Length: 265
Image (cartoon, rainbow, N blue to C red; front, side, top):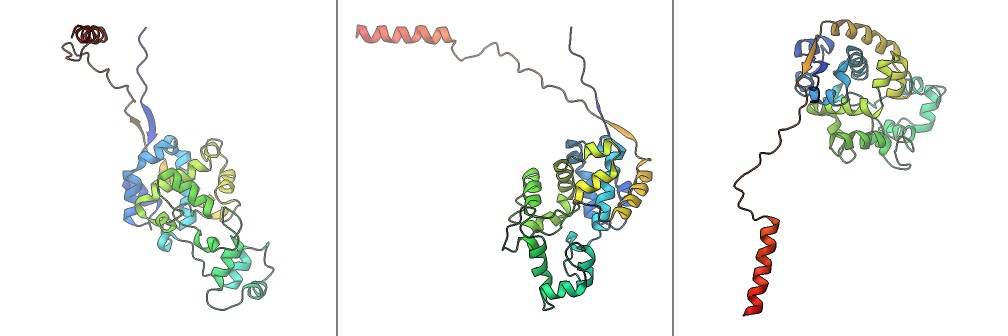
């Protein structure tokens, strides 16, 4: 009985006009990259359902203000008050921040080297904390994160962390981050809170993420299912009748004949 024909794969391809609605403040080259490289989203199954796409885009939007974050790089120029607010478990007040790191120019770098140091793969006593700050759509943070994403996309982000901000790499980075964190399971279970926690280790910006999820889910309702061509096996190589290469037996008898001729000489 012949094998059944492979089925076409269903997916949701997001056109440029929909991407512009989802990320109205984003640079055009970032949006175009997502349109042209949706195969990288397909490779990790993100475009299999609208819900997976909505979860991805909602978090990307919240992390980068809709890809409008300057340089797609975390701004470490915190005030002492802001730092105390973000890391309440470390600092009781702005005065506590100033007491530890001072107020001289560059104190924020010193703070980030300390706060992010010796975790997320960052090496203690180095500048890894301020070197591997949040970048790109997912805001990759920590040496381990840069290493994991870089390996998946074939770019050495550990040596060149700034490359995580390149517009052309944003689809690759987003897909790699999604796959690294195993996000499909959260989207399929409708567990947005679990997705957020896996994304950044907590619930930072949860209200904003939830608001974006509602907005983007509505936009994606207009995206229709498409069918990708089924993957088929290549045809078998044709049999060449007039092959000039001698057969194994012919080669064997030729070798015997050569030995016989040498013995007769």
